Image (cartoon, rainbow, N blue to C red; front, side):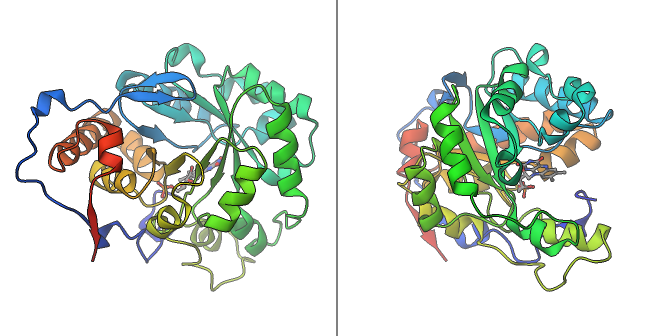
Length: 315
Ligand SMILES: Cc1cc2nc3c(=O)[nH]c(=O)nc-3n(C[C@H](O)[C@H](O)[C@H](O)COP(=O)(O)O)c2cc1C
């Protein structure tokens, strides 16, 4: 479903309106461009992440394995899909245990904010340790939950649950949206709660309201394009906490623009899943890395820190 064109926002994430200022005198050897860095205390070769897509059903093991192996090969971070299924059906834990396929890269565990309220911290700790993750992503999806008839609509007490998790868990907590975006006020509340990273996951890419309309009859229509475009999320949230930009990032050039707008890392879900299904994930990741490095070179940036300071114009 998420691979269909109809699952994507009609209104983009805003990257087509951003132009990085071309530097005709980069004064750099392209071979010296080095975008490596650290994320969750692990080394990465490029500030990219395959964000959460799957887990919890038999076929998901193969998908997660291929995504994890590709992330390891390219030296980028990898996010597991929601581990709720693993709590409810421990027999499916194997579909999330990817450390043996990706021994060196940052792996991020995942749970929904609404589920977080229901389980003791011990259960959440187990989710992280059993997959040998370097961090936990807590996902926010109020749009998806509220428009579907069987959705979990009680979002009260979520911030408290996040705060409790941050103070008791032994690894950093990332809070991510799932495609409708995070604004500055929410980012500041998350910072005060002890969150280490925010993945803004703004609108412009995968639209969970569109997916709900495609797969469930009772979903309330009208919210197809609801959300904060990723570019606007970055402009609002920059400087609050380290940021991952995702939601509608569709090339390494978008990723470079996201970094120039204030992100520290860029991620995507649907494009990498689609590439995997077409058996061309390796080529896709190679292209994104090259695009990111070339965009860095053409803005006179040798490092991620310099790319963060690159100038851009909002057209
Ligand atoms: C098939 C699919 C499954 C997803 N499952 C999860 C999930 O389990 N947990 C989560 O935090 N986000 C999940 N997401 C959301 C993505 O991680 C990401 O935030 C969102 O799709 C926006 O990125 P994109 O436009 O590059 O797809 C999923 C996305 C897709 C496409």
